[in-house]
Image (cartoon, rainbow, N blue to C red; front, top):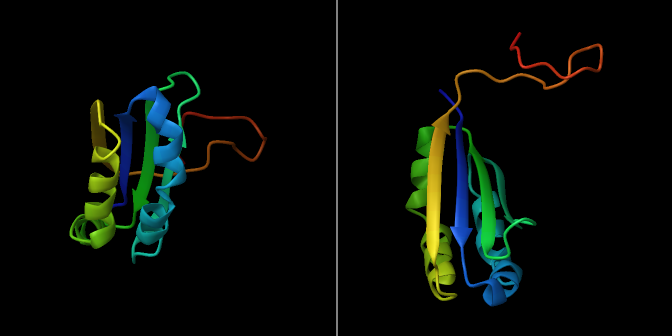
Length: 113
């Protein structure tokens, strides 16, 4: 069973982004409460005033499928749409290897054990 990671960039009108993020907490908390959710985060992109970055980790494809069928996912789509969604790019990744960034010597490494 492979972990699934999602990375998304969502663009909203710059003057609505902050409100969209502040009022999104019920959908974020709802996703975090689901079985198989490891991490679920929305954050403002400090380099683009329109952009919200989304990062998700799910234990399996089955956990992600459950999320997509859940009211919190449907609510999130409606929530964002209500702020004038201007664009979105979402990608999912199936993780085949995972390791620490820093080795025992405290130095970062690109290699996997």
